[in-house]
Length: 181
Image 1: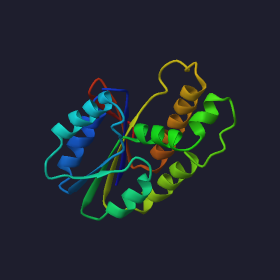
Image 2: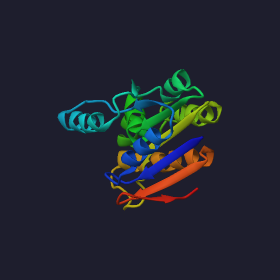
Image 3: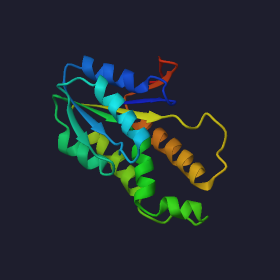
Image 4: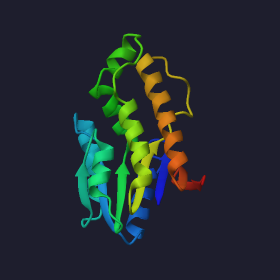
């Protein structure tokens, strides 16, 4: 089963994902996409690490998410990916997309398009359970900066495409889960 859990920042989506992974009865592999590029992100990572079950296996993968999922999926495994928002951000900055957006150019680099398509194609083929955590960023105003607009658009498209291939989709608001599918 594939599950997408979406919500705003600090909505409780990661806590819900962690609870569902723990309750799955499967071996949990936590796939982290964050990179500790500054002190604030290091603190966020430490916060997540502190509340994780100690018997969960950790895989850190900021870019090749589909590859990490293929390498770690198994019938008796629950893959918990936290989070797709940071992964998408990593993709935008790994190639020329961020620079192109800021320069007002058309996005012509392979990131994020190829990587997101590979993830969408990979998910239905994976054995076991997959829980994906992603931010819902489209509920606010349209950002003023080109890079921020690109990110919001790409995140919205990614969430839509993931929801189409997931059997369960949950929106978390103020710590309360709302089952969408």
